[in-house]
Amino acid sequence: MKKAIILLTFLMLLKCVDAQQPIGVKYDVNGMPFNGYFDPIIYAPKKKIMKVHNSDSYEIGYYYDKSGHKISGMLNFQGKKIWFMKGEDEHCDKIKPQDVSYFVIGVDSFFTVSKYFYKNKLKTTPIYVQYISEFGDYTVAKHYSFDSMAQGSVIESFLIKSADEDTWEKFPGSEKNAEKKYFIHISSNKTFKEEALKYFGYIPCLKSKIASGDYGNRDMMSIVKMAEYHEKYKGSTPILYDKYWQEVRDVKNSEYRANITSIKDSIWTFEYYKNSTKLYKVNYSSFYPNIKNGDFIAYYPNGKVRQRVSFLDNKPKEVKVFNDKGILRFHYQITGNEDENPKNNDIDIKYIVVNDALGNNILKSQGKSSLDIFDAQNNSRVVATFANNKLVESYRIYKNDTLFQIVNADYKFKVKSLQRRFDFFMSDKQYDKALSEGAQGTVLLSLIIDPKGYVIKASALNKVHPEIDKLMEGFISRKMLEGADFRHKFKPYKKGKIKQYYELVIPFEFSINKFYRESVYYNHFDFFHQMNQQMHNTHSLSLPPGL
Image (cartoon, rainbow, N blue to C red; front, side, top):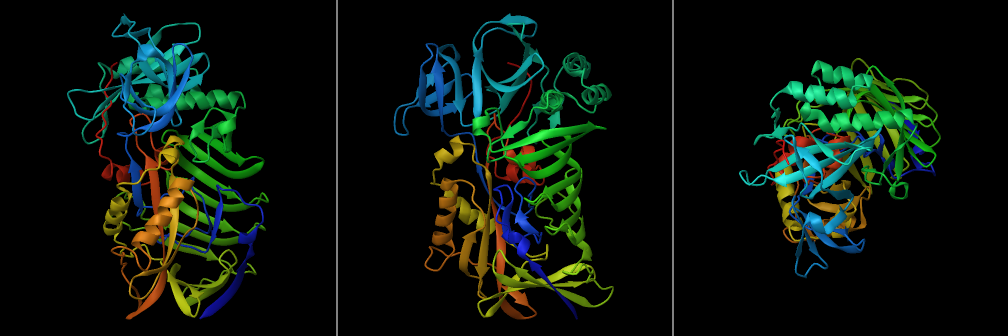
C-alpha cells in the first residue's frame, strides 16, 4: 500500500470569518467532505434533521400608529389585520390597516396603501402590503390575504408604483395548487408578457426571457429581484446581508456584502465580502431562488483560492481543493445528485487527483493508496484510504481507539427516528428572540459513538444564534449522552464483523417558513430543501391573483 503524508496546518490560520468556519477533516452523514471548512452559503445536505418554524405564532416586532408613536411587542400578521400583544401572557388586540402607518415583524417590513387599482377599479380601502424592492423609479410591494374557500391557503398579489404616482397598479399574479406546483391563473399569459415588458423590457436579459416565455408570472419574484440587482450593478451598489444571509437594506444590520462584478450571457457574477476580506465568487443564472451555474470559488483570508466548485443548474458537479499556497490537493467529480428525493442518496464521488505534500498524485490504477493527514484544527492524525478512485475509508486516532468516519453515501442513517425525537424535544421550546432576528442556519453536530451505538461525546462544530445553540446543548444532554431520558441509540458501525467507534456529523437545519417570508435556504441553496421543507410544513400555500 502506497502511503503519503500531508500537513493541514492551513486550518490554523489566525484570521478566519464566520462565513468560513474551519472544522478540520470531517464528512457529514451523507458522506460528503467538508474539505476543512463549513461554508453555509452552499452547504445543502440531502439527509438532515429539520426544525421548520411555521407562520402560526407571534414574533417580536413593532408598529407605528397614525400619530407616529412606536409600539413594541409581539405581532402575528394575518392579511387584513395584525394581532398584537404587549407581552406573551397579555390579551391580544386586533389592529386594522387604517390604524397603522407601518409595522415590522422580525426582518420583514410592511406598510399601508389606500389607493390601488384592482380589476380596473380604483380602491380606497386601506390594506397592508409588504415592501419587496425598489428599482429605477418603481417600488414593488406584495399584498396577502387568506382564501376563505381553501383552509390555510394564501392569496398573493404584486403591486407596483412609480415615484411620480400616488396609485398602485396590480401586477398579474400566479397560483399554487394543492400539490404546490405553479400554474398560470390569469386570463391570458399575453397580458402578463405585455405588462412585464412595459416595466422590465429595458433590461436586456429580462427582455429576452420574458419575450420568449422563459419567465412567466410564476417568476415574478425572480424578475423583480433581477431588476433590482441590475440597478445595483449599474450604480456599483452592494447587496447587503445579515449574519444569516438574509438581504437587508440597513448597513448597520449587515454582516456581509456582495458586489455584482459582471453580467454576461445571462450569468451574473457576485463577489462576497466581510469587511475587506473576500469570501466567495459565485455565478448565478437566476434569483429567488438563486440558481448557481458555473464556478463557485471560496477564498482563504490571504486571498488564495481555497475551493472551486463547478455547478450545473444548482447541482455541484466538480470540486477542486487547494492549500493556502495555491497548490492543488484534491480534485473529484460528483455524480448521482440529480434525484432530489432525500430517501435516494445515490451520490457518487470519483477522485481524479489526490496530491501529497510534494504535489504527487497518490492514486493508483490498481490497489489501494493512503494519505496520512495531520488535522491541525482537531489536533489529530487522520488516515484516508483510496481505491479505484474512491475514498473507501477514513479514520482518526481517538485516545487509544481508532475512530472511523462516515465516507460512504450508502450509510443507513435513520433520519426519521432521530427527527421524531428532536421534534418531541422541540415541541415546547421557545426561541422568540432568534425568530425575531430571522435566525436561520445549520448546526453541525459531531457525535462520537461507541461500538454499542451510544453517543459518548458530542459537540457543535459551529454556532447559529445563542438561543438555538442553547437548545442544541439541551438536546445533546437530555437525549444523547449517558443519563439522558430514553437515550437515543444509533446503528453501530462495523469494519468487517467487528463493531467500532465512529464519528457522525449530522446537520440540524433551523428555518423559518412564513407565507410572507421564504426560508433563507430557498433563496440561497434550494438544493433538496424544498422537498424536505414540504415534508415538515403544516401550511398548504396557494398563490392565486387578487386583492
